[in-house]
Structure formats: structure tokens, C-alpha cells
Image (cartoon, rainbow, N blue to C red; front, side, top):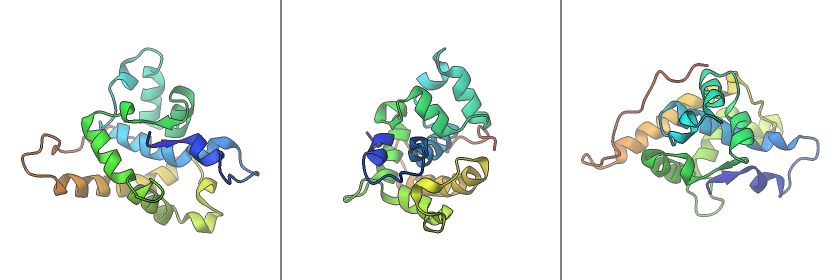
Amino acid sequence: MYDHIRFHTDEDYPADLPPEHAATHIGMYWRWAASQGLHNPVWQNTPETAADFAAMQSGTISGAAFLLKHMDGALTPDDFNESGRRFTEFYYDDEEDGYGSFMEDYIRTLDTPSLGGLYHVADNAENYAKLAPVFQTAFTRWQNSLKPDSPIKQPAQTGNDTL
């Protein structure tokens, strides 16, 4: 498991925030990864999730809303295709806390300390628009670091993500 809302709410979670705020950062990443075709196709093809997946892609619902409604607040290897798993493992990897460069990028890009902390980020299109290019840059760097003959080295899908 890469991330789960309970990892955050079971710790020193701010008492003044609803638990859904602990899913914002996970959902922002999930929405971006899905927009790049890094997701398991089951999410867009299963009748129970297809409409909400399309709504997430169009920005009608957030990645966090989708994550909470359909994914039990968790992001797991099964949620991704092979390329998505490999990149997510790389981006989330950190020997200490398990969030690696992903969390560093999230905190820096949204300046979460000035907001009162990680969980005070608004789950909105403006914040997603700030994060998406940062995630894309990390993905491109990762792809460029792969061996030229790697089957994973393929261009990211674009044009699927509307803000």
C-alpha cells in the first residue's frame, strides 16, 4: 500500500478538520496518475466506477472524492498498471516515512507550512493545477532515467486531464 487516509487520521491529525482532508494529497496524485494513463483500466471500465472515473478526469469530482467513495481511502499497487506501479513506487519511496519526493513536491509546491500544515490544503482545481505540472516533471525525469530499451519507457499520455 502506498498511502491510506488512516495513515494520517490515526496519528496526530488536526481535531478541527474533517477526516476527508487527509485524502486530499492522495487524491491529487491519483487524479494526475489516472490522467496520464498510469491507472488500472478497471477503474474506468467497471460499471460501478466508470461514471465517477470520467467525472474525476473532467474535474467534476476530485481525486480525493473518488478515492474515498471507491477505493476505501487507499492507494495500492493494484490501482495502477505496470508503469504506474513502478513510478509510484519510485516517487513515494523514502526510507524513513515512505512518502519520498512526492511529499516533498507536494509540500513545497503548495507551501503547506504557510497554510497550517499538510491537511489544510483545499481540494480544488487551483491546487491541482499547481501540482499537475510538478508531478509531470517528476514522471518525465523518471522516464528519462530508465534504460533506453525498457518496456516502461513510453511517452506519457496527455490531453486526458481537464482542469
